Image (cartoon, rainbow, N blue to C red; front, side, top):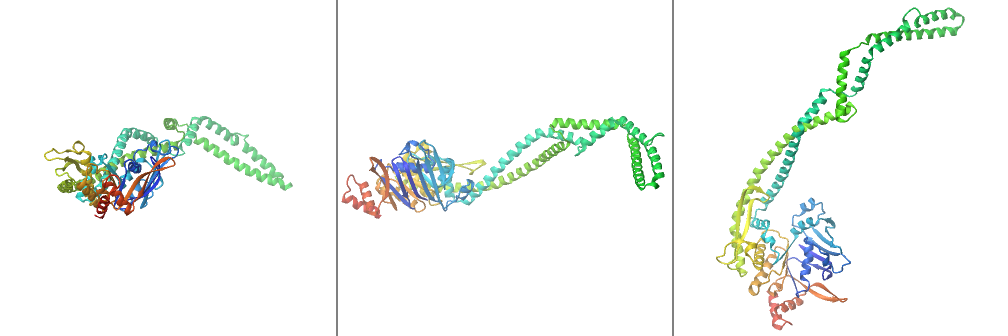
Length: 551
């Protein structure tokens, strides 16, 4: 429900704020007073195009803000999906700067124009003689049939399931594309993995192999040098250990004369033992050194393989090659899991498709069943609106393929005169006929489902007398279920509303501004009387106005 609208610096409006009530609100005023300006401001809230030419003062920005009570509109999901703060009293604001750039806000949070339009569709419906595109739209036509079918729980269940179905379809497509690419890469990944696996890489292995190969390639020199060193310690008559032994004997012979010499003799004995051990180890090492051409060949081949792989993968260590091998292994495992995931998603899709088909068939049956009732009730209302021979035919088409609305598509066909062929609305109906048809449809579905605030802009043009009275009665009945605002020139309609707003012009500081006020009961009598007469209202006109308002 629209609660308030405030407008600053828009066309002839300097600054105004209007409060709206529930039920039927009437807006009247002289031609050119600014009723269409107010409608334009509401259009900005609904997401219409912004134009800097509409600014009253070209140096200031234009601001239009409306507040709505959105309780009962089931819009929490919209706010959640768009990361907006939900509030029962929600505000929508449009700002247009002097350069013509527009900004939109929902509850003071900046939003895109598409987000604004999406929310506004749930809240406000501006309809005039020249705005009948909604009636021609297939989505609106199907929503009318659904309102009569009274199966909202089924359509909601289907919509939720179909949303999941499309998500799974997208997921399957992505997985299939990934699998297709993976198949192209699979052989190459497997080849690379096998190359690394065959080398049998181990951490810290490279340095040890390089040192062993270096030792084997220099085995003869190492063996010869160790032999010479061992010989220097123990070989021949004049060797180091023999000399130490002789020195030890000499020192022992004089140790009794001086205690310090005994200590030196003991230290010499320790050195002798250590050198003897060194000599034994040198001999053992020399015996172990063996030139092994086969081992050299094995190490050379493995190191060559490691170097080649490091060059290929642009790394310097075996540890880095192991990381690459593990990554390739994971990719190969991913491919296996990818196949399993595709099979799982396919299974889910098939199960969901069967469930959706059951729901879609149920929806189709409900829609078909409701069509005769729609056609009958619309014909009755059109007859009351001086279109006795007008008929609406709802053409039902059923597909084999699931869509967002199930299997069905409906098309409204219209015949205004007896004997005329049924044709699509935009090809046969005039503006006035479409307006009355839209009024009839919306008055019926207002009794069945929650509609947004609807604003009728002079859709009563071309009717008068008894028909105008019936148009007003239909709006009044609609207003028991929803908020209705209508701009009118007809006293029969103006007298129906629970609230009456009057748009007028006033001069201030050599400028003309549009303004609006809520009429008192007495002012309302005068306004309806003026609409009934030309010039100053006569006593008869005033009496007639009172009678209309009373009824």
